[in-house]
Length: 257
Image (cartoon, rainbow, N blue to C red; front, side, top):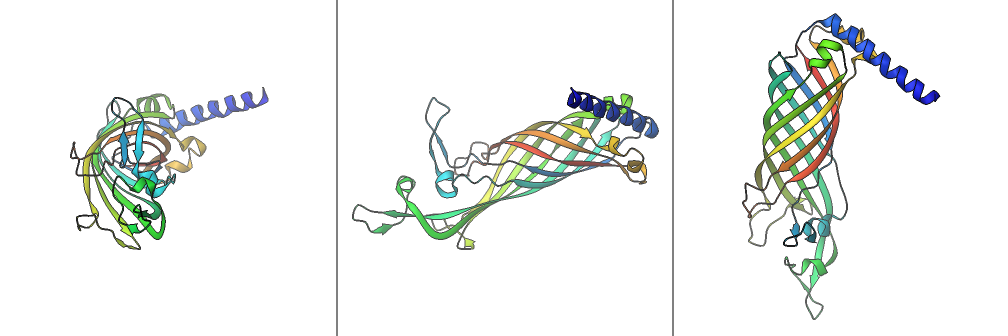
């Protein structure tokens, strides 16, 4: 009961402080936003789905990189245009992601070492050569933030949605150098696609409502949780690695005049 009472007190204080904060600033809208993002990413690349099911038959990605799930780090800059019922704007995003593993060693029926093929790699053993896959996702999109409750009543929760066009730059490395496909071409390129996202931001200004208004440029800050669905398979181009993914992203966002 004490814990519940303490939680209720904290929530009440945050709402009251945020309300005072909103009244102190009036309806001054943000013109710019900056996001620092950290979230999950595991591309569909390498999955072979059993027909008429949602089960993975073979997973090339796990064969080379195991169960490693590194986080994707990104920076996003937003520009808002309409300060009416919410904020509508555009944004650009730049990120980086890298996963490491080991090369694969295949053998013929006589036990001699041979080059692996898509069919034989699943019976291979780990080699000694370090391998890596790096991805740099680029996004340009539109964002809408429904901050009316915060402006009018000081409620520190702002739901939002995004849509974007994506381009995933990718390359594979072997022993620190760019790897090559079996065709002899460098294993690097790009895959285009698009994404949709929804999230909610929790305004942090109630922690220190006076300190957050000291700057002539800075308006407020918030912690956010965002769910992303990415469709990045080159719009059906099977010659491109499928960089599609389902993501859960956390981070901090900052608004400026």
